[in-house]
Length: 198
Image (tube, rainbow, N blue to C red; front, side, top):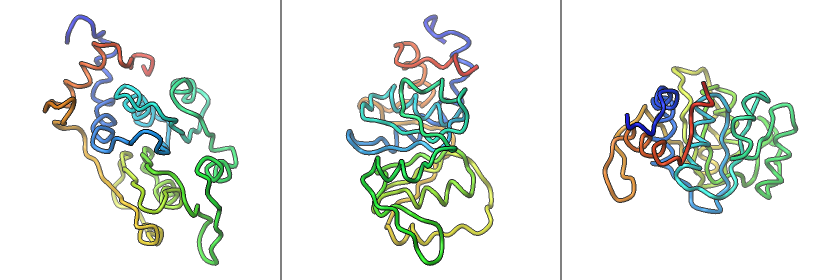
């Protein structure tokens, strides 16, 4: 570690890279509407990675607890699970809420890009309801075999479902670098701080 990186920051590099890797490979365009589902360590690190790499547009984070929101409220607009979040998402994305005969309500449009950080069956299905046609869902939250998931909206919206695994080498600033090295550089250059997550 370079002297500029504290041990408290360094110990969280592995967790941060689990988010940094998929964010680099699925980086949004400015003005795209981005939703992060979940505000545990990986969800928070996803918001940090987006900001550290220079994404300036709004980020929306679906959050369960206030103590999680405290870590990201300066970087992201917080939407709580206890709110009527579907109505809020419809307003944010200028969407209509459609109510099918079978199944749960969904947005006719939705977010351009969703980072799903919980790994829960419910939220994976919900991400299909909240993505815009042709949008992309990045599965960061880990899970094994889930029981039946309704993929109807994946086909109906022609959305992209992308997996991610750990971290790797990345193309970053016209150079091929290990994800860990990118994280170290971001910390060294004060683009982000991780120690608050301890």
